[in-house]
Length: 151
Image (cartoon, rainbow, N blue to C red; front, side):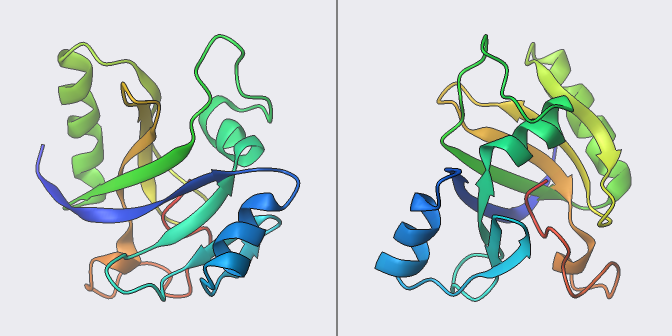
């Protein structure tokens, strides 16, 4: 697998707004609410994307339900690594599977144009192997974002 860059990173947010209060309020990070309770920015130097991804939305994107499975550790954060093309996501997933890793979501295209897959790290991070078109500078994809890197 050839990782091109880190597409994004951020906390898995709380439902009660405490995550937004901390990151936006205490630290002053400028967010846009791209979806209800999904706060995203590309305005923090050094990160292509930083976003608060609510746990119920992460569960829906990963397992198809808003409840995180009780038999799995609840992630505290997410990170996504972009590969060179949408076609490279599937082989990257197969490489990880061949190494004995459990893939939670196989490569697929999200409604906002990102091709992604997900697995969990030993530390409990929700890890995406993705292709985010608007981050590759080739003019492909929705420049305005959508959900951006998470999802």
